[in-house]
Amino acid sequence: MRTAALLALAGALVAAPALADTTVIHAGAVIVDADSAPRGASTITVTDGRIVSITDGFAPGPADAQTVDLKTKTIAPGLIDLHVHLTGDPGGDFWKGAVEPDEWDVVVGAKNARLTALAGFTTVREAGSGPASAFSLRRGTAEGFIDGPRIIAAGPSLAIVGGHGDVSGFRPEVNELLDSGFTCTGAVECAEKVRLASQNGADIIKITATGGVLSQQGRGLEAHFTDPEMKSIADTAHSLGLKVMAHAHGARGIEAASRAGIDSIEHGTYLDEAAARAMKANGTVLVPTLMAFKGVTERLGQGIYTPVVEAKIRDVADTARVFMGKALRWGVPIAFGTDAGVFGHGRNAGEFALMVEQGMSHRDAFAAATTNAARVLGMESQIGRLAPGYSADLIAVDGNPLDDTATLENVGWVMVRGRIID
Image (cartoon, rainbow, N blue to C red; front, side):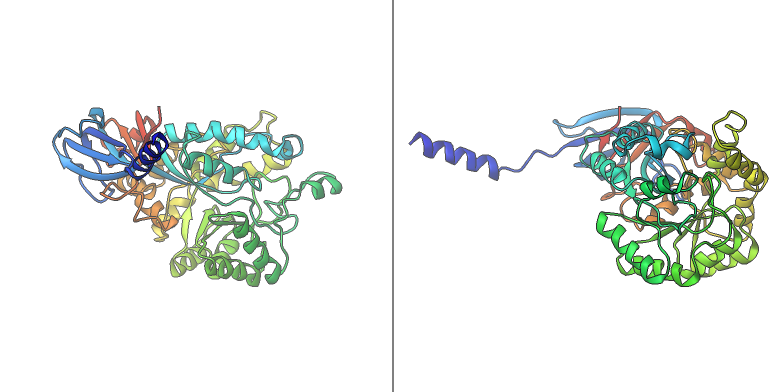
């Protein structure tokens, strides 16, 4: 009899629905998206990680709800950074792969994920990491084990042999030992590596379409992959439902990647008008990463970089101060990304001031990090604005970031997927 009663109780507990986790936020003002004027005093109700409602005034919530008083603050959508390297910190890039175990990447990444979220960035695109480190961080933040943003992860970048993204600069046997296994030569092998990245869990395919600044070698700033190789990468990724992001500096490399169907150009330093036309014609988005250039120039002359890398940094410095402004005038679509990891994580919002310096309005810069970035990810129905049904990714600031994005450099409160990051 007792056993039957216990079984009946257990069955009732299993059948009973779990209590909803509800948070009620009283906000002094609310910016729902970059195109809308701020709302006044409002109540935002969040249940189980999603926005349920945004109503005027300060309404009481359910008896079991947590209430957050932000009546002196402006609530805005969480920011999106389309280019970060959570598993890395600036300096020592040339030799770190030879001395640090892969597991250390996750430790560093957990630290940086928290800093990134506290800076107001609730979604990031991890633009190249070790074979599994970013995927582990992605799961850790999704399941709440690690404080941090939503992570869209690429895993290892695809590169040509000896190009930016491949291991170079060591003895040949060390280069071979540290090889990620994601270099490719020829359209067939490149398609195979895209499929391998997808099999391993990549959310997006990252390629290094030209040489780079911080690689010890990575010669040549124009197209590294051949046209058939890049088209194979783009077509294969798209057939799997994945987008492709391409590190690219030189104009002809940018142009070739755009023609091949690559979805976004990262950096784009030497963009010219012909490359801009190709980007516009193919809907390719520029992610300018201006903070990366600022970050590396801050470390010149300190023995952090090798002479080879220092020379490349000095060569690119002047162009980095003007190229995004040219892209803006030529009508190239632009979205927000910083290359955090090249500079210290948590400073991501410094990108806004640099974008404004090159001619972008504060409102458009805010859109670049919210609605535009969400569209690049194909997540515009989930993030980038505040509306019922959207993920509860919110930040609180003083003032109105649509008029002055400098307010975004001092985020005072953050919620990611309905969880408050203290």
